[in-house]
Image (cartoon, rainbow, N blue to C red; front, side, top):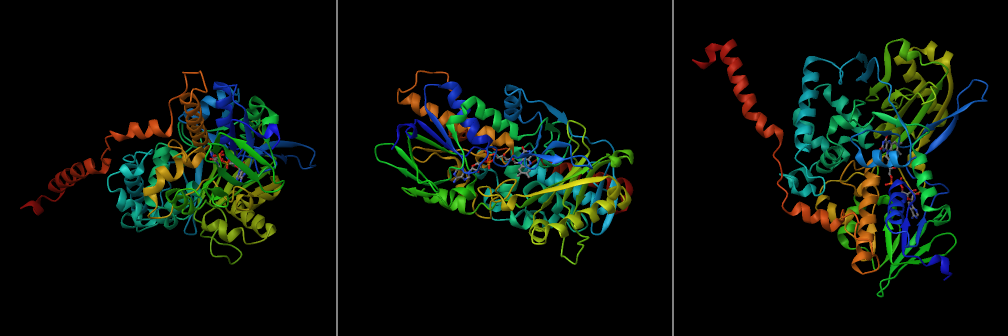
Length: 530
Ligand SMILES: Cc1cc2nc3c(=O)[nH]c(=O)nc-3n(C[C@H](O)[C@H](O)[C@H](O)COP(=O)(O)OP(=O)(O)OC[C@H]3O[C@@H](n4cnc5c(N)ncnc54)[C@H](O)[C@@H]3O)c2cc1C
């Protein structure tokens, strides 16, 4: 084996999580030799910033995110990293009314939720309150500590919501779930969905553009810069592209050997951080094999399904019409004789340079139907949607370019935005995803306990894995630094041993609701108390 291939730490995966882990180790302990191995021919993983044509003559371009893009101040990890890398953000445009297209009915609305009918509106509010209330009780480090964890683990989100929803609230909730998780409510484990929501501060936070919410701000110049700048700090020669890892062998002497697929190169290290998505760990050969609790958890984590698209215009005409460009759709119009879709979510995507754009997603069931048709059919289907919302004449007059990225086809990602869990799997969640196995440590946004599934979660997980590696080197007297961040798998597990699990807010609300209903009944229907 050549000497350059023998290092202290290997990080597999040059997405935000892996690169942040490498950056952190290098910052704290420059004496350690690090290599990052990346399968793709680029860094950034599920973030990808592309040049798109922005003028009718095709001579001008601007940068747009085809992968992860929004951040917010409540995401402390990514906010701190953006400051460190001197990357600026700008606010998501959200002035004016939004549009809802539900059950073949189009409606403009100014509140956080569309008002379809009184009953549906009340049902939607009630469902969100119940979900928020349940999510607020989930300890995101260890979801199985939640009261009724077994009950929730055995049900899908659809099962959980079924008793609360009977009217048009269902298509609205389905569309919101497709947008957040990239899957259908009947496909996702209820306890996982609550954990995911709570990791970001609640369901509504994941869906809104308000301060502190998931769609609040965008990064000037695009989010892929985060990874590109991290590479500059780590050192370009330490990050090897086109290097897919195929086999990982842990020897009895504590060394770890790493084999790649194409060029059959072998690398050696003492500590390895696996910062790749769960579904991409499955095809790797391990010697010895990963423990059962890890294999089972990873096998039951399907990734969401998303196609992201960008429409470039020469004018933000929707703004002039008092619209903010946001549309939520259940796909009920189903043009071209298809069963559903295409549109799931749309929003103003105008760049920091002021190039007018609408960006959106085709997610969940809509994605499986609409990624089965041709590019031309999909483009036509989406333009028909835009024409219904904003007027066909405006679309044909101002449209410059359409670009799409089907993340289901992306090698070494396999979908997006994040992996979900199927029912009955959450008992293995903590150890299955996060527990180190001998000299292998696990990062990646899916292993985060804050903003899991988001860029912030990727940084959170990278920070934890880096600390685990640094602590182990220090404990073996191989590092002098005593100021190592104590945020590790072990320290988090210890912290949670005495954690007091809260009750659902709904539990406290029940007596208030009963007393209020009784009081109102007494005032308006005094007869029923006689
Ligand atoms: C369309 C879309 C929209 C999104 N929107 C947002 C958003 O607005 N805000 C937000 O915060 N997040 C968003 N996300 C999610 C966010 O992009 C991800 O959470 C984050 O980028 C994940 O980072 P990661 O490093 O954990 O994983 P990845 O980015 O997936 O990085 C893993 C890396 O490992 C590599 N790899 C895989 N297998 C191997 C192998 N065998 N050998 C070597 N390398 C391998 C992959 O090529 C990849 O580069 C979105 C994602 C998508 C795709």
